[in-house]
Image 1 (tube, helix red, strand yellow):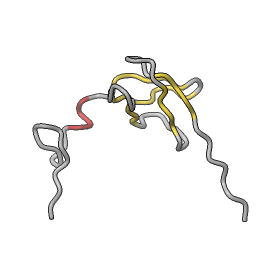
Image 2: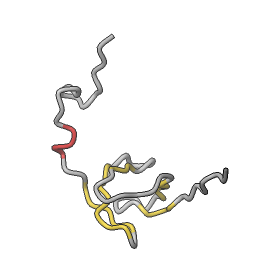
Image 3: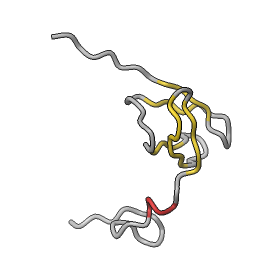
Length: 74
């Protein structure tokens, strides 16, 4: 059985120009973040990769508190 080739796609952060590495096959509306400035973006175009600010509503979830920290039930 042949192993799938893993490809890394690199795009630049619109805020700080740091490289953002995308290791999984990108799809529209995927969320990525910059490793340097921690800005969060949504993929809106695939060829070439286009990023826009992620909508804050994706973080308005009952699993997040007011500080956007994940809440876990232990």
